[in-house]
Image 1 (cartoon, rainbow, N blue to C red):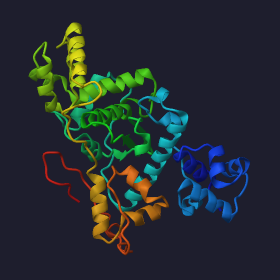
Image 2 (cartoon, rainbow, N blue to C red; image 1 turned 90 degrees about the vertical axis):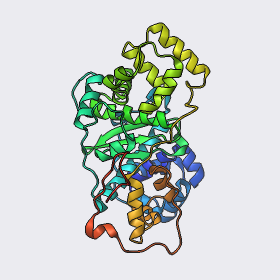
Image 3 (cartoon, rainbow, N blue to C red; image 1 turned 90 degrees about the horizontal axis):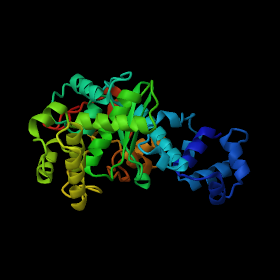
Image 4 (cartoon, rainbow, N blue to C red; image 1 turned 120 degrees about the horizontal axis):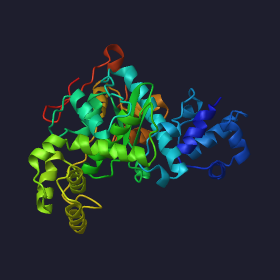
Length: 371
């Protein structure tokens, strides 16, 4: 027996058309369509051929129904520039991320979600309300991935095959999810994380999460969240020069362009000063990157999870086997922790079954995460 939704999801995860899968598996396109729609049952030989072509274990195709992530639930940064095939591929990865989160919550006590959803506030007001709720004051935001995890957002990474997708987010069963592109600069990663938080807060349940207006609102939220008005106004002079921008951007760990935009938004740069600063920054290479950028922020929860599992004799390979996914799929979701299957390292002892370790996230200025 196979599960039709899992054949479709595995195919979409590989960004394959039915015609392409037919050529790879030696099974007709018509037959594959019948399997995906539950109109026919493949033979054992056909199942093995499909699994081999897709690079998924046979057990994955035979597991329980898997719920797809609907397109309208996902806030893609650039939906119009992302092909439908690629959108389906990353949504399929997101569905695997939800399954991983379900497995994690069965074995560990994760931080509960504490992300507010507001009706129709202005982005600036929404950012200030979240900062107040999370007791950030007017100071620079700490590590954004750690901050999101500490407040119950499940943060996963995107695979390297879809690095032109910046980031996306969605709610599922009252749990917020954010998927981040790990190939971007550290500053861009922080902005992406804040941008997706804006979508979760302002567009999560009641309002459309896509479209130019939603993207503008999420950008404005991210700018206000990372660069709080009172702190920026108190630190930055009116008409700041480019050398001052480059020196100050490290305070908030944002890109030079993001700081320049925020100063213009706060009327600390005139239109002419803003355009001149942008031109000069582009000449210095700051439009396409961050030459003196910060390190990329990654998860604090996920390394701790797998450290605890290893301590109890469990390996990432055994987790992948329980999820019936290739180890590479697990690796793609957890910020490239470079898992390697070690023969003989697996064990049946599960440190989480009896106690379900409680995982917490400590701030940047603290020590390592506790359990």
